[in-house]
Length: 207
Ligand code: DC
Image (tube, rainbow, N blue to C red; front, side, top):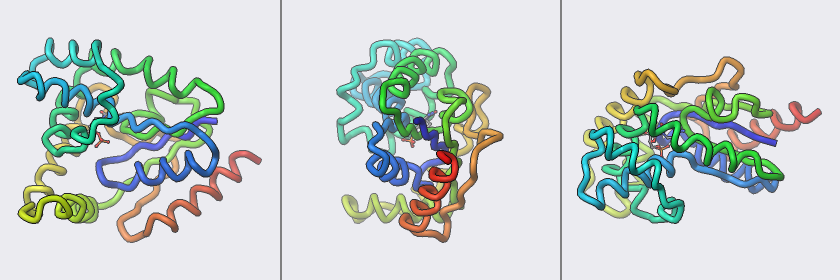
């Protein structure tokens, strides 16, 4: 059983993916963390995420232990991840890891940008979880403010807008809903409400 969840940053896809994995006893892979781990490795080595060779090297030599490093959540790491993720060779280097993860029993929930379209096109259920730019920026702002009282809302909003644009306009595996994905707008909904809707969807798919 594979559930594919795609969507932009702070749309609520990660929370939903974790809850679904726990509910159905599935493994969970946050594929954004793979790109973030490569971005973090580059920044720590003083490299340039815009450099093609540097990006591809980081993806080919990725240490999966870095996925758990709390520093992958930083906003500068998110930007670096988005830059390197626009390169086809980087995506190819990370593709097999994701497919191998999905193929192991009893199945998995994967969340990212191209799970339903590229990584797991045969998933049992595909979801595209989205929300307005403002709703997503507000969520990220509140999250960041817990550790940094000086964070500026407009900076968070601009950062998110820039990343959305890059992720949706790139030529390889852009952020887009698969034709057979169920689209969920979480702008004005809470996580419980969305979770229960998706549990109903899974039940009807399994019947
Ligand atoms: O989901 P996230 O914000 O942690 O992802 C960080 C960046 O990684 C995102 O801006 C684009 C890239 N990414 C991707 O291109 N494909 C994926 N499947 C997951 C993430």
